[in-house]
Length: 413
Image (tube, rainbow, N blue to C red):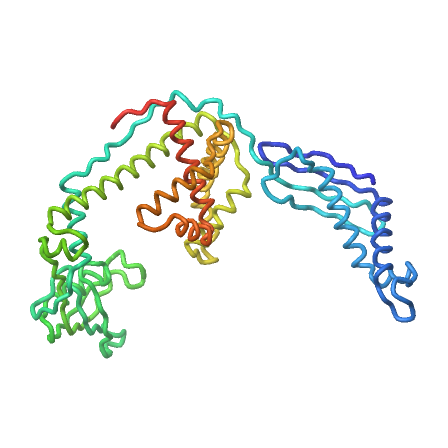
């Protein structure tokens, strides 16, 4: 079967091939498809498989041409993309021309997996940030814990910034009339109401009403309302103030297995230290990867980038109308993530750093010990949730970065 394939683009990972199939080859493919149909269809007045080929071709002309086309395209794929080509994604057909009695022509577009050598992965200078936990950072974290356990307590005095209020709010209509107030629940100082209205709310005590003109801000989102003064009426229904628990031994025992507030402080400092260490490690890895990519530039398949963008769009539940903007903004980050994955895969393969089954088993045992459960139970849960590949990938990355950091200079910053 004569099929002519001419490369038209071989830049980077992109490939384009022009395919031409002579009319006589197309006709032969249609004859083959017609014989296939003739052998299986049943037509009135004929036994199954005994209908004349001419009748079958007339009855099923479009279906026969479609089957012939699919066969020819598949043959072209097999001829153009052999086992030596590592596809990054499924090829696509473009500019198809398939007219009766004429040659069949089309283009095959596809991308191949990047083949990189990573000639320079050593000799980089890296700076690792200090992962110490300061007393001020510890105090802030303890305050956040107090905030999480705070109670909202009703008060009878005027509201203050940070208080939660219930108000009846009304603004005058263009004709000067004042409608019934609508109920709103606001946290003062949280940007939920314009400053002028918050000021009016803080002038009264629960049960009181205040009314005066309020000017809308000059940067109000609705341009037609900017700088407009409206008669505003506020009735303060109630005020609740956040009451923080004392930072004492009782608070520590309420949070967990801590006998004293000092034990709580020590545990929080340890957790913050571990978190700071992980962040410092992640920043160091990112710094190293950026230098490797700058020293070893390479192109990645657009299909991989699009797949990653689509995955994040689903995870973040991006509305369909916002997808183009999201894709444009996220694309540089997606390209870098794909490049990072390619570097890790290349080094893992080249230096035999892929995580083994024994590595995975050891990690699962660590996880089981931390949870005080049987390793088999953890393994079953991970397998059921489809997370074993995730564990394998995590371990492989750790081994790759350990190998890299041993070959580069790291100083404390």
